[in-house]
Figure 1 (cartoon, rainbow, N blue to C red):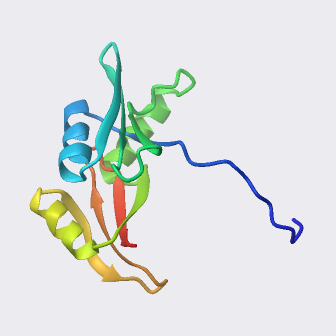
Figure 2: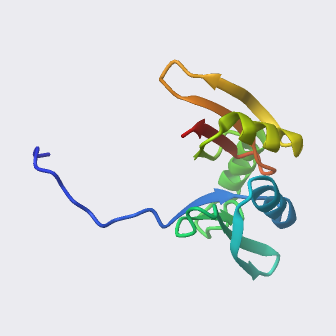
Length: 142
C-alpha cells in the first residue's frame, strides 16, 4: 500500500449480534444499555431487532436469530448454539465517558458481569458483561 492517504466515504451502517429471545434482547439493549429500538422485523417465530445508541442512531446493531442462513448445516447450528451458551460466539466493543458509573448502572440491572472495570496492559480501562444470548459486551472508557 502506498503512503498516500486514502480517503473513503465508507462508514459503519450496521453490525450483527445473535439473540435467542426477542423480549430479553430488547429489555437488555433498551432498558439496561439505554439504546433505542429502531426496527423490529418478524418472520414466523424469528425476529430481527435493530437497536442503536441515541448518540449514534445511524449505526445499528441488528440482533438476529442465530444461524438462520439456509446454507448453515444442523451441525454448524449446534456449534453456534454451544458457542453462544459459553459466551464465545460474538462480541461488541462500546465506549462511554464515565466507565465506573456505566458499570454500576448495568450491574445494578443484574446484568451478567464478566469483568469489573480495570486498567488493561494495552492501555485502556474497560469492563465486560454478557447479554442474555451470551454475547460479550465490552465497554471501555472513552
